[in-house]
Image 1 (tube, helix red, strand yellow):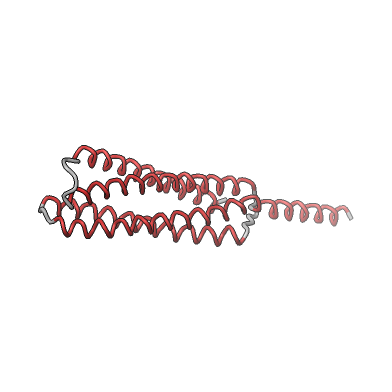
Image 2: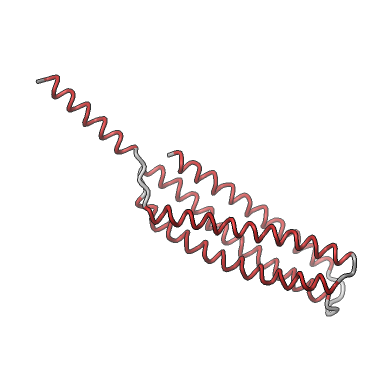
Amino acid sequence: MAIFLFIILIAYLLTRVLLVDSKSVPSDFLKARQQASLIAQEIVSLSNETTNNLNNISELDKERKYKEALSIISQEFEHNRLAREKAVALATQLETMTKNISGITPPDAGQKALEAVSSEVALISRLVTYNDYLVQLLGILQSKFSGQSGNSGDKVQELIQKINDEARAINDLIRKFNEAMDGFDSE
């Protein structure tokens, strides 16, 4: 009888330990995470296109091909609009993830998820600032190439520096998000 009770006790403890340590994640969190990842990739793609287009605009400026530069600037205003829409869509997915964090077990995994979501929320703020600087830069360049503005070189350089600073901060936040999600996945 003692052996039987001992086996039941061991089975109970093993079951208890295994159930406590297993991770449970709400399906809505997983779906939102997947969507957020896709949206973030689209934002990065738009950002890369913008970087390439800014380089092209610079080259066209040196070659005094202002009409072509203005065409690219018009495209960039559209890219900027799309990036803002993507940021709103990302915020929606992050909201869904946040609402479902309390359903994640064990608590350590939920904490990692919270860290990841927090860095993505900060990323959205940086994206808004990045896009604002980009719109200012595009406006100045548009005025310059259409002959409406004088020497704006200092302001252009200042905005390019600010855009680059925001891009570095965004990349850092993306790295933090990925590290936190790696930690979440390994919980």
